[in-house]
Length: 209
Image 1 (tube, helix red, strand yellow):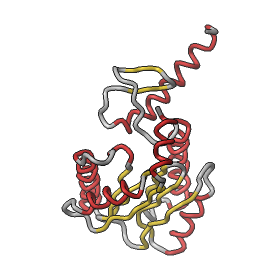
Image 2: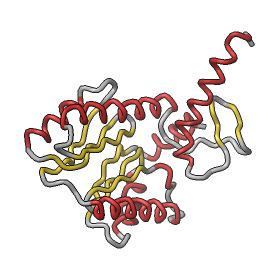
Image 3: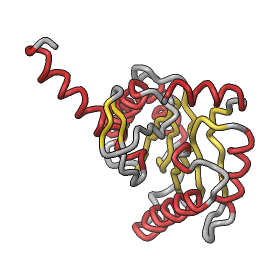
């Protein structure tokens, strides 16, 4: 190995570890570039490491653009999964809602957007706290469900509405929707999935091993 490349490779490994760590949901093991960390080599996200980095970059850039556009006139969040961006929150006018979507769509690497921003007043602190609690409850319920893989799903909650994201089969999508609907306090479940066939899922599993 070229000695001059070691610091750069170490930095890349650390960056990938930081990206992948949140999706492991407590797993002791982390595989980065074929390196075994902590015990078992397991990658639990159905996106490539490059796509995960893109998603983080999209969220940062989109958030900056939205803040520059709205200032304190609204509250908007952007969640990117496999370069599909879910936009949630509240704005005062329909023009603001459309402007936010256009600003996010122009961010580099964004494949498509789902605009769920509401034209309404800002949600209260108690409502936002309840959304955080509902997200935690739905995630915990997915973990407790043994016939689907919880880490295949991203959960976002806004005003009691739960949005489910991920690359999943129709069976997994239906089961996760059923589980989320069964959580007390959930007003509605919106599916923002990229649905794949069982065969495509098997190919994905080979790629991310």
